[in-house]
Image (cartoon, rainbow, N blue to C red; front, top):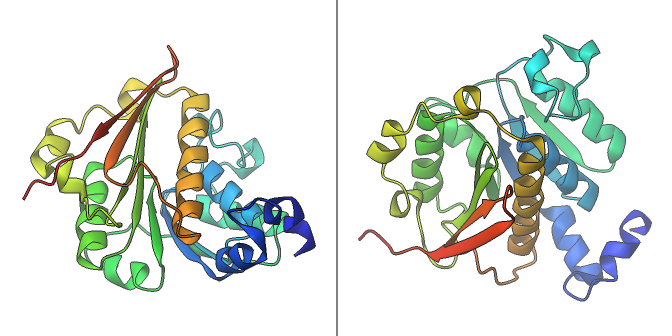
Length: 236
């Protein structure tokens, strides 16, 4: 517990809360600009078991925002390198790397052993699938998306019962499919801002703390430092 001493001093954590963090199982889908900083914060906080799903290899264009990867890591599997670095940060926790794409064939098997899910993807069909499967399995989902200077964050399938389809229909997501980081770009600090807040939401769920993002969508304009949240209405 000594490594978490400063965290344990926080009234909402204490020793009992740190034990909850140590017993938590969190699955991160996507080991990119959101997944790397998110996994780093959760590992440092002492989350006992972190799973990471991503089939991609490291490319030169990843390096400006995915800071655990280096030039020496080019063409290597993201999840393998990230697992190695996270274990160096915290050898006390378990990291499981899944070098595969989450799809209809493996989603339920990958998700069933984890209590909290984190959507850190940049793929429309994968986002839709995560939303559907997490709702069907009643797994809390911390959703984040980033583009240029803008980030979105919310908590789904939790106490308010809000689902992804209550915010974005599958049709709307597919119609906006071309508007991704690969096409429109991304500022690295926007990734970091969203991922840090995503990590905070995960810890709140683990500690059973109330979150004003359970049932609300946070929109962050990091260019102008404008943060707004909107209440989400259930679609049915």
